Image (cartoon, rainbow over all chains, first blue to last red; front, side, top):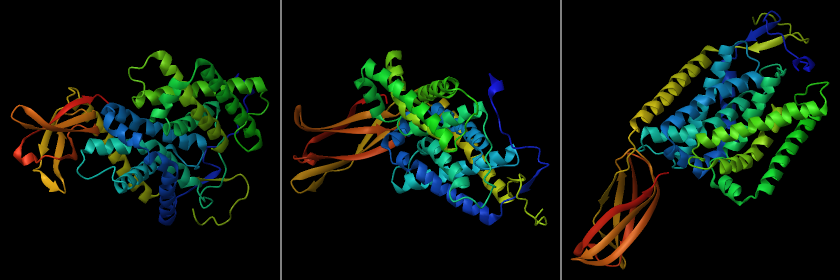
Length: 289
Length: 139
């Protein structure tokens, strides 16, 4: 199976490349961009009431788990998307940590300004409310730091991700888009309202949308694997991608306490509903990143 | 490194490193992150015995036009969040209930307070005032 993959890799040996250390000015500019990106990506979620409430209703361990998932997520995003061509893994770790600091500050400032966070609150409540905003803010911060207006650093060459990398990007895209929908009551309400027939139709529509994005990748400079048949592409990206999206939906719903005490039949319906935006996010991530 | 002024147009790549300032910021972020996660883990152990316990502290009635306003502070001294917390105020004279008022608090996290008020048409200072939390839901 792996033999029909053509991977384009940029040499990573360091012999043929030089390492540029950003100046203080470049660093500060990139931090400014990161703030802008965090706001751009996370403002709708920062202004969603359910996200604030989850901060007080979720068990602290789930919040801790949510926080820790941010690290590998951002690290993978930084590595696979090639948004910044770093010299070493440790540079990517520094990148991720800066994004985390920027996203905490962004969330803190915005939520305090909105009066959602105040000084008299228990620390756990403040941390929880910030944690809920971490994923969207930090993804925004990471992408913006390197991409918004960014030809000042890097040489614009992208690292082409492997198949696993593609799946990772799809997972990140699904997570990003479904995160703003998952905590809302509407997701569950839609699942209650839909008949089984409509749910099957939604699954097929999600698959169709993903497949259309795969085609779009051929035209719009997304990542493509040459010499792969339509059937193979459908199986490898659309079907496997949808399974990844469903898994993301399930984990997210569980993490946000949305399916506690719910029957498996109903959980499946809610996952199908949430996987619709997830599928679009996943497919778009392959195209954009 | 900067002495190499000739920029190659071919496939030579410029990898990005990390400046000292960036490492400093990253280190602060790292410490902050570990503290946040650690705090939530410790907090998780503390909430092992879940409990909602509400204390109500009421202020004296203040006349507002035809009504009498009574402000209250509902404090959850337990460690679990109460959702849809109903607080009821009753004015009574002897055994006779004169007036009741009710308010629902959407969420009251553990060790937190919510402030609110009731309006009565009777003067509470001449009657027995009883304000208490009567029901809640697990979130």
